[in-house]
Length: 376
Ligand SMILES: *Cc1c(COP(=O)(O)O)cnc(C)c1O
Image (cartoon, rainbow, N blue to C red; front, side, top):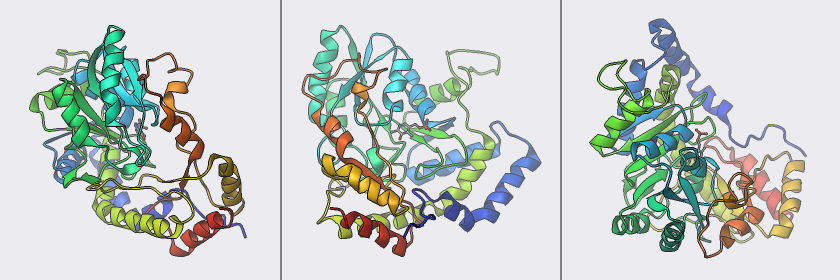
């Protein structure tokens, strides 16, 4: 029987638990009227530093701006190569392309769908052959799990590259006891409503332990402002986070640790019930996930049947991602590493993301599991 109430990500249930706190916080902003860079913005930045252990947090307008600003702070532009995975959301490659730099696409690994560190050497060679200067690697913490920063940072250190962690999906996760925000020179995240920590509009943040980069980022965020408001020392952007969104995020951050626990309970319930039937997600040893998505792999020829069956049972599903970036019209002329990008191409045909949020009811989850088991 179709159940029309199943949400892919249930923001309503979350709101119901903190509605009055949100209203109080929003009212406070309406009363003080400091809509741009009000006190909530610096308060949120302080709290995000405490939460992540990063020295500096620079909030900004969205997760894409966070990537653009991070690249700008490293002065990356034309002639520079930026190594990115092909199996990710478009913003990871869009940011370097927008600045005139060249994204170089590499593959992800089979087990975790994360940037394959073994492809970095080859990507650097490809860049150099094209007369480009390899400057930066952007690993993506896909679906909520940190990339292999141990291997990637080691390679970057040996080859004088900088690492920007695209943590739009992983804020709150850990690797070997380090929290997201502290694993790369710069870490970017997004507070888009559907992300694990989301606001009610667009929002983002950049984390760094580097004082100089933090200073530059604060300037880039407001048109490259110098010591005085009308003194411009850098070319920047208008990249601020709204005070209202900061006020909302402060309230959501309070329940975030509990929500991460609940997401992990939902994930292990899926894992236990589905591991003998489909390929379930794996975590690297030492890694935790905040489960931005719970993504299974099914045989390509069965995926449509499984999706149709779930949909007819009223269960919303999504395919992240339908096409690898190196095959997208706007990006197919950029270089790829000479090894094939086969895993990225295969995954786009086999992945399927199931409803995942902290408020997923056990009974509803049983129905989702039953629906999948009935066709595989
Ligand atoms: C969502 C997302 C972004 C972009 O964040 P916005 O806030 O939507 O601009 C960047 N990278 C990845 C991997 C994402 O999932």
